[in-house]
Length: 224
Ligand code: E4P
Image 1 (tube, rainbow, N blue to C red):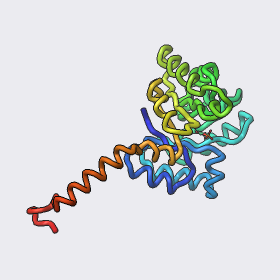
Image 2: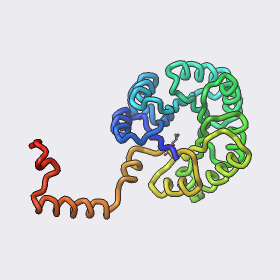
Image 3: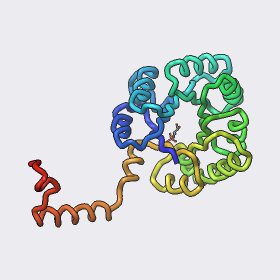
Image 4: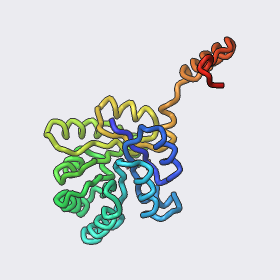
């Protein structure tokens, strides 16, 4: 499963990129607004920090003609950019157009397998299926993800299913279980994936024993 970072914060991207496990970054208008920086400069900086990664940047118009203008502008900034488009009628039309032109798309705000089918038929590169927002209203967000993975695989669509609106590590466990292609998550959730109390206590024991014995990796190697 590919791992994307869900943020507009360049410092978070910088830190996560150093781990070498980030395949891309997703942004949305809220995250960009929160960054307090310009849209283009933020997205270009993220492209630079994650070389070769898929970087999603979203259009904000809701009529087809303006959405197309915005999409072409955004796509012109960098070849790593994937144009993010909401699942509305002009949005699906836009995805069909961009697909014909060879521009990659990430269809966002997808909550059902039938919405996902429309995105897949239009040629979406990624289908962003939101889970946390459904769980927030007492639903089961992962149900639609499982159905969408099954739909994409069994019908042979080329779209990749991207689990979005991830709130905690259990969502990542579930995304792996349903064989989602990608999960995007906030920096804090990726940090949580590292954590296990037995890792911490195990490491402490190893290092205490090593230090008590006065050992050194470089002993005898001519290095201080
Ligand atoms: C990702 O592409 C979405 O923009 C994001 O995951 C939404 O997450 P939220 O529901 O926590 O705002």
